[in-house]
Length: 117
Image (tube, rainbow, N blue to C red):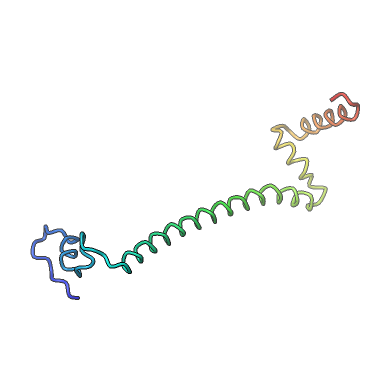
């Protein structure tokens, strides 16, 4: 198919293409059953693609959350004891200095042992 050049610069290019296109693709022309089925299949394929992308994103988010929950503790326990990483993590979690956090944890552990809690 050969398209003619635009005569008028202000002419709508989409309209010219539509006018020069094959009759079965013009707006308002009846579509053949095969063409209608292909259009539906393409739309459904696009919907499936969006659904797959959403599912992959949700799975990646869930996997990231699980890794974020599991890995820091495992890494902290695998580091040398002299680095005091678990204590540092506890202090950061409580928002206190190491000394204050240790004192608070010691007091809480002592009250649980005595049965006061």
